[in-house]
Length: 224
Ligand SMILES: *Cc1c(COP(=O)(O)O)cnc(C)c1O
Image (cartoon, rainbow, N blue to C red):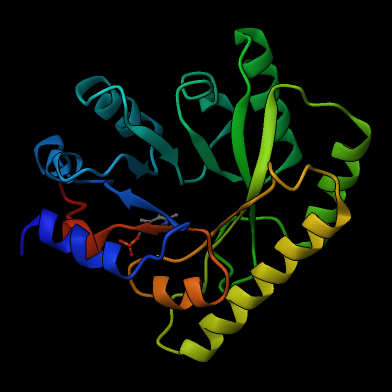
């Protein structure tokens, strides 16, 4: 099936008000442009180098999302150039983004990545680390960043009940932060969860932003 048709199929399952981020990592620009031509404007990449390269080659009205782990020494080229950084998983990273944004005179939108999956390998703040970060953000002003919500990933498993539990837990953390009123509610509004295998479940559990790659663009070939 063509990228355009796959994209349309996914869009049919994504209700109004939920943002679809088309995850284009590993796919060539020619392929990604098919989604652009079909009207898609939000694209996600997980590596800084690849993101910057595609940014050069593709139209300026794309909203780029950095969804992969970001190292502090790679902050510079992305701040002020991407619509949203989904993967802020430490206070030090938030501070590095803030410094770079202030230096450039911009405000960078970010999400805090939380860890709810059972898998050890995934990045993200634990519930305690999230509380620690929020306590800091409450007393210190970071004028260069706008915290727009949370991002989470479920365990890679066939067990849909487990996936649902993990999304629910992420949603609870999201609701808890909102109730804490550290951020204005119109700002802290995004809950980024759901990928190709589980985005419908994520939407049922309150996701406002899904990150879908292989269902739109096909399987990824990491050998290239
Ligand atoms: C690759 C990736 C996705 C998309 O994965 P698919 O299973 O291909 O939809 C979503 N989120 C993150 C953080 C990713 O790295």
